[in-house]
Amino acid sequence: MPADAWTVPNLLTYLRLLAVPVFVSLHLGGRPGWALLVFLGAVLTDSLDGMLARMLHQESKLGAFLDPLADKVLTGAALIMLFVEHEAPLWMVVLVAFRDGAMALGAVVVRRKGLDVPAAPSRVGKYATFALVCFLVLGLMDETFTDSPELHAYYLVAAYFTGLCVAISTAQYFVRWGYLWVAPSRRAP
Image (cartoon, rainbow, N blue to C red; front, side, top):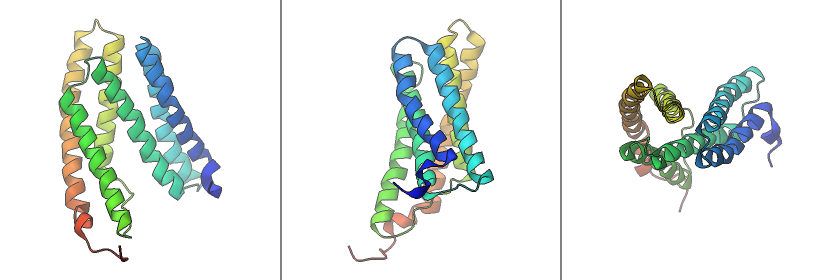
């Protein structure tokens, strides 16, 4: 393991990854309120680990890889759980899966060419992630507090806003980095 594997920010990221099976287990076990609390705790570690990495000067390549991975795993698990419970629409699952799959495939293609993978998220990408987290929190709340039509209305509005943000961030990804998919390799295959 790299020497920087056990920094405080990376430990928080590991906790976020460990929270995913706990979240899924609670959700599938019919305890959406507890699942919501675990999800919120994991989301807070996401904000905290980035801030601590900068404050403690513990930014690392491992952290730059693990942090977005943990985000994708956590939000993906929550989105799938909401879809399974008929709370999230299929189009949202497909849209997020397409974006994340395209980015992962792009990273593999670019790395195999010996090129640098762009790691820094764009501002639009950050907005899309924030919107997705808000959508998921509202969905988990809607599932927990099923008798609130106002909450359900906010959730529906959040779904369309989130879908728009994810679609725009996906388009931006292809506009900004799509050329790397067809760029010449730095090394021979």
